[in-house]
Image (cartoon, rainbow, N blue to C red; front, side, top):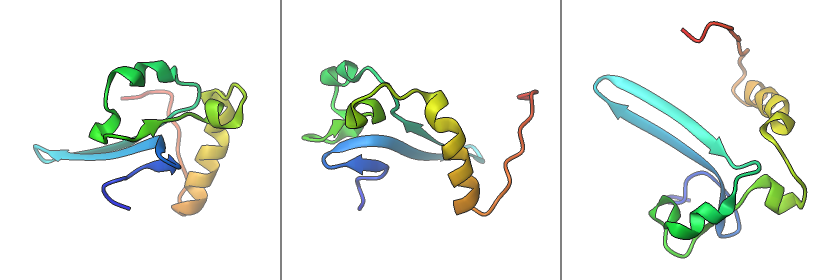
Length: 93
């Protein structure tokens, strides 16, 4: 529940989700921690939430999980949940 947006495993955030609106532009995104070096979070208060931590798929599953491992199932699930078809272009412009 708010203010704890994102995906949580207990008291640790696994995935951050954000939306920004400004100057007539809306941007949004997510950051799924797959094999993130979690020691960097020892030096900050993640998301400004005291007493909360950060975790990764690799940490939670006890094995090395890369973005390549999760990309296809993630995109398949995204299409299913949002009832859409993703279109890929080699030209990012």
